[in-house]
Image (cartoon, rainbow, N blue to C red; front, side, top):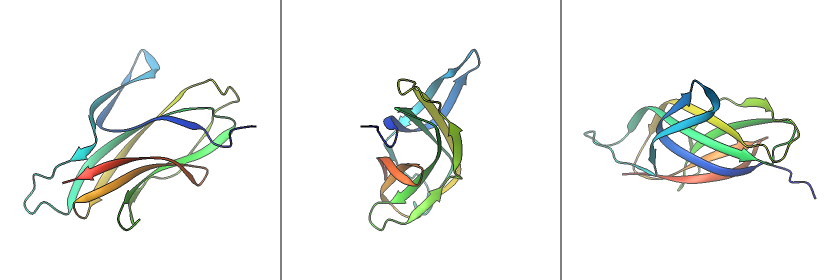
Length: 133
């Protein structure tokens, strides 16, 4: 039976993504994060100038459209959604693809749990928690 969606090996939030100029398939993730602590007064709303997300996929076939949503866990409200991107992944299910995202100007309205979600062809296929304190 064919896998209808790719398998997400990794979905990682970080401070920065540094591509290797000598090898486009290599990316260094800087300061992997699972939580953000506000140092502002008042602490919220908190605006992040940039939040980087790295997604690694396998079992990809054909063309797919994908995006990242950042969602409040308690209400389901989307606080940031990237523009959909499309890519032809070919037909080798063993190929591994890395998708870097640089999300600008993210506003977290209050402390709490947020989900970083990866959407593929309008289906959410992976999510990771991001705690705001």
